[in-house]
Image (tube, rainbow, N blue to C red; front, side, top):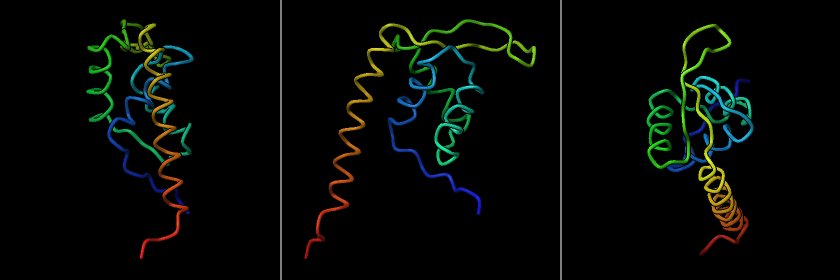
Length: 113
């Protein structure tokens, strides 16, 4: 049975991109591939969501980019976390975990009624 992707909550794409870039710089396709692999293909980010998010993160100073050559010998823009991006990753990770714990708590609570 194929794994079905799920919709991504607003703000989650930014967090996943920051996490994808935490280990090393990557081009957009590499970021998309990392997210898919890291989530067992449950979360898939399309180009229409990924690139606007990368540009937004760059505008905020959390990501910087440079042109380079991909593993396919093609010109590609490589993104990397800035020090501000590393700090933001910590903040967003903490906030998301807090949110997820609250959702799990609500799901385990007795139903109202």
